[in-house]
Image (cartoon, rainbow over all chains, first blue to last red; front, side, top):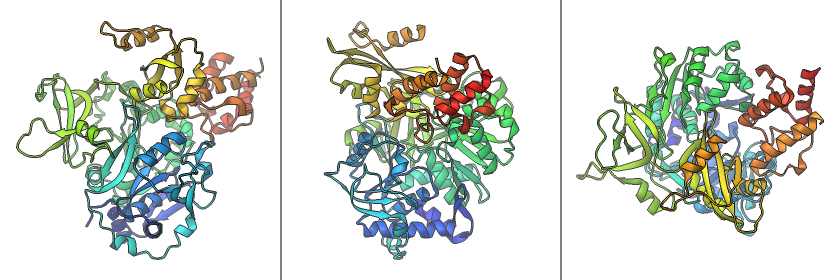
Length: 535
Length: 83
């Protein structure tokens, strides 16, 4: 048995109940404790009316209890939907409505870090909010018919009920991750238990994660890097160590934390590693426990990677690649013998176990020769179930394998343009559309444009991305206002910040009377970007 | 101009406005991290600004929460460099 994510926890709890499963500062839970707490939470959720397949919002900062919350939802047969506690209320409200969430597990008011706007309107309250953590009041922005305190939720003793009666199978959904949508609304990527386990099993095997390992958890739960941290640890009986909020702001403190926690496996976006390489004073730290450094989400600028490896030559380094729709689907191990001489970005590498990845040219042929460019298509049991409630979008992204006409074989079109090198490894070249990465987050520039078009004074807008060494891209909006209208940069930024997560708000808003056009009448983005670079 | 005023202006115009936060509640004691006003990339751009504006050099060892807790502690750090 082991075909659902919660089985990973249950098995480790059976075999090593006394081992530490999660630790954050002085707070820790053993596998036995985590499993019992999650059982009780599951029983409480069932009592609150949760039925198998129901979506449950997870509105929590990093904590030991957040791990209990994730496991409890899965044990109850629910589908967890992570929400960024500092995202604008309107966006979170949209997500809750979009996938029909009626129960939310939420940190206390403080976890919203000063955000006060409502997520859910008082006129249309949630069914229930469970306040995660020992103290604090439920957030005012999340009105609910019932509010359950954490200690009450965890004192539910009808432990056995949810697990035995849970009819979930491995193609049912485990979680939904919302990602930027080009048409202006975020879309929910549906991940089944089987999808997630395909990735988790590969990681456990490839990286030989053992009970002695100590995994960092840097990425927030709405970012799929967290799947590795939480579920690979649970599968292998290792411990997961959530990075305290705010600590990653200070590169030296972060390096100190890695030393003190004796982290052996680190996984994050490259920009966090770049910050530590530049300002972390790594040579002063004893990071000898660290044996693996994994990164994903954006291109690692090669000179910063070289600097990191020269300061920290001990661990093995892996570049992992994959959109949310596949989680990680290809990987490349950094070769320590040649990395110092390398000038071009790392390859994204070869497919992980049980994944197929191949490139198809514009003409519909398989790109088989090194140097030939094509769109990367991915097949396998890790490929997501589609987008929640969006059959048309799903049909566009998840298609029949164009090279297979004899049986049903769904592939995901990544939209990423790749070629292969002489070793047969894939190289990422760029995209054919307006999707970019900033701080490892995936952003559709069209979504920002669509928000700005909603502003009554905006006549026309183009949002462009300017490449940046540290964070990947910086976002700039070029706006032409309606005749006679006046608005300031701050006005439009505030408007965006009420509707978009922080990393999507344009850093600069520039005003123009007219936007430049190409010969066929489209907004000339190339000219806009070039003008900006010239200053 | 007073150091506090210069720092306050940078924090409000460059860090808070792009997040759509109103700077009207910003005082010299407003905590900058717990509120998320400054994140790791904001910290770096602030440090670069301070270095250029006041002709100082901030060492990595000084990029600590106690020095960047609020506008007052940032101004104290700058002043200590000038002393």
